[in-house]
Length: 605
Image (cartoon, rainbow, N blue to C red; front, top):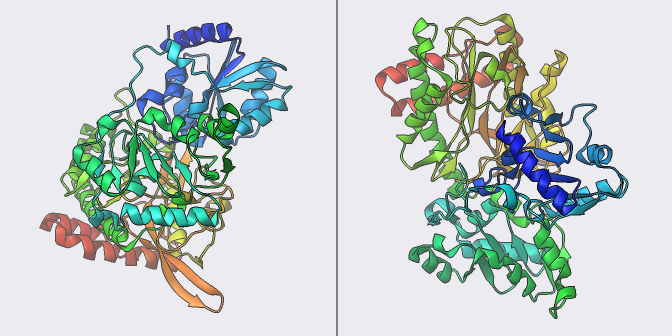
């Protein structure tokens, strides 16, 4: 029997005992992370689907999994042999979770979702939606996986390390002072910080509790006078404890965060409803009713730290430039190595996994390299049409001297985080491959060329990447760009480029990726990505205007370009970019590598 089906049987025994009609398993943990420790990968355990986004729902007689376009193909493959029905988000005809439960469970039933692993907003919206489906009620105080998940991984106990001021550029004390000032403007006396990258940024600490993300499991409670870090104390060395003490930061055990909130005596507290989990939200909401403590008013607003950390200081910007130089050197060495195989039968000796291993090894040679920033996407041929494809021993295929390789990868350096995608011609291409490659490149360049008023939303700019695709009846369903952390999470918000309205303003000092793509299932796919820095452009009577600077330094393959589809402005941008890439990287390369780079960066005419 498929192990997932056995787990469903075990779960349904618990459900019958608890009189539940359904259980909902989101992708998140108590800190609402995109990437999470193995201990909280309940959705993966109960469904077998390992993508970073998705929700599994199990009733007594059925099961379904909702995910987005990045994972349609991967999810369909991973759900084979199980009861799960794939629900494709944003596709017409796909029911919402509440609508589906309304039909599957009926009025007056009860469903469960773990309030520890779901944000306050997510649970409140679920309660409201299910109320409309005939009064289905929601239970939040049960984790049924505790009863059926044998050998469940423990919560990580990896050591925390200091993040030196020479990389952070601002002390924890000064950051906390800025946070308190921001809280005063929101009429809040304090806040509970639950997002792990926010905590790491605030305290100038880093960890290894989450794959690819240098963060550590904890909470941070800030009041008008005190700051308390809730963490497993075994993670803290004498050096880190001394540092925290010098910064006037108290330390309590991770499990004591509930008591900390119950003993919080300020008048009010900011709880970001998209960041703080529902169980802790309820602790604050109910504490005046359950004991003699005075009631604390909840200020439901976005955490001010989200936007603070997206605007990089001068030290962080310098760190990004250093990290991108190292990454560009590693990428160029890789492309030079790969060029020796392109168009030759010997390329079949290489596989997708081998490509990943080679690139990672070249990055690891760079000073201050710490880790990859996400699992590499190395998709050859039809695999390039799978948006978030990750090669496994079962899916790994050899390369061929034809078609295209899509390579999306990144690294963690102490100075900064990188994220880059290149689509590489491995030999002769079809007209279709050339067309989609060129359309993607045109969209990428149009973003790079954009000048815009300070405070514009990324949604207003997103159209530039798509307009030429739309003329051909082509599109992609993922966002066009996301923020990038300073030796932190590769995905950082709230600013981004995407079709859906995201009001987060774009301001100077932010980093953001530019990564349009086109994916034709069972045929081919292409994506081109640079990480950009938002910088001043000019100031006029209409205000301050901004532009983008490419931080990424790596040649873009010219072989697949249909030059007749390109405008002169786009060609000029590409030539200027390549000149800068060559001038910056060539002094750090061998003579042979530099000679190859000169040709790769030769003007397109």
